[in-house]
Length: 405
Length: 152
Image 1 (tube, chains in turn brown, cyan):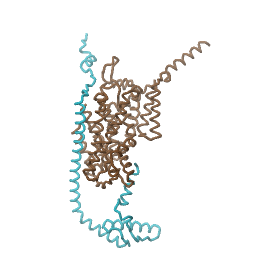
Image 2 (tube, chains in turn green, cyan):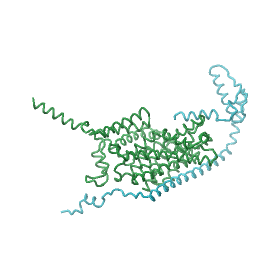
Image 3 (tube, helix red, strand yellow):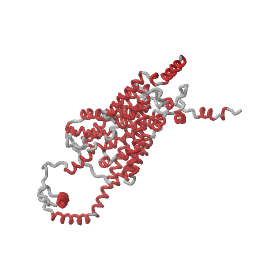
Image 4 (tube, one colour):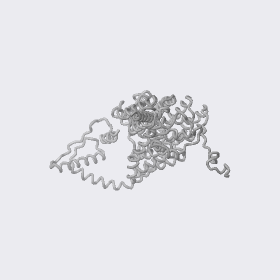
């Protein structure tokens, strides 16, 4: 009888040592609570729920001890002695869990260009073709990226880390993931990884309607905000067909490292504008996009292990991220003001803030702030020009960062 | 005994030893260089795109003009048809009487008349008045705008 009780107690003890509860530390608990907060923001507040919810759940899964779904050590590229020996992708396929395999799409920069393909099939460039000057606003808003680079340098980050943090100012999730995953490869950072950058980027993209309006209102007068812009000209189908091909050639020749992002964006757009590939367009903008979004979200969430998030560096990333966003918005609006002056009041400076590329959220914010001043003012179409120019602009800025660093 | 030289793993380890990436120093001149090159390259690329699209626009405007010339004869035929439609409709026009407006009034009257055929009654357009004397966005443009902006 005593033996049975002993075996029973031993088994219970083993079960306890193997359970997640035994290994659950205070940091894990904090991260799980943080994942609950993101789930709340995604579900109740609808902050970018399509991405934030998978990210939050990935965060939950990865911080449950012994669940073994994601192994950061497989991607560190360090051997047991702590020397950098490169990532052994064979080992990832051999020993990796589900999330390790999905994370390969982030690590090898496969997901961001595919998401750009989907975005291309959903983007209408006519507002930009009708008013090409919008490109200037799209370029001005990228200033946030480069000024944040300075901020990150001051805070003591190395070049690769600074570049990855700065790209958050482009307000473009896939671009941030693409750039940070390329720059941070090769064991150059101990504190920051792609997951950290993506989490900050998507959080700020969700907060665009909160961050932007105060900056826009401070920098503009009521008179400037109430400018009604002239109706845009109609764009012919041939122009819409030539645009993606020409942009790909020009950008890929000027900044080759931007080619994967711009090329896929423009492929998607050409498929849409051609009007003869409706099945491919349907897949790219629905099925493929949704699949990649799930993979991307959950695997990015999985990289948010407690030691990567609960540290000073992440706090710095969050602070610099909001600076990057603010400067980008401000530069866009200020450039809009210059255009207002040059065109003698024909351009509403509010469309400048849409130059940060969060599509179509930033354009929606321009529309909303404009309508607050004059409810009969419709800025949305005019703001879509700088908005899609911002996507191209941040891809170019990404290319520049990749080639300079 | 095979010398170490032929041991593939050793060879790989000595020759292809992966190195951690070398990063540039973050001194002031480097940071300034990144900011200046970054901004100028972004602006330059997008300015080139602006020039290209402007050229494209000029080209297409010219082409459109040529098309307009050749199709003017066709337009005359169409307007003759519109005249016959208009003569059947008793529309009293107090709005600005441009050719475009006549055409739109004729089409709307025809639509109303077709509606009458369906339920056995006859409708007559008695007057068309401008809603406000202030020139603003047309109701068609407003409807279009609302339709486009509704999803946002």
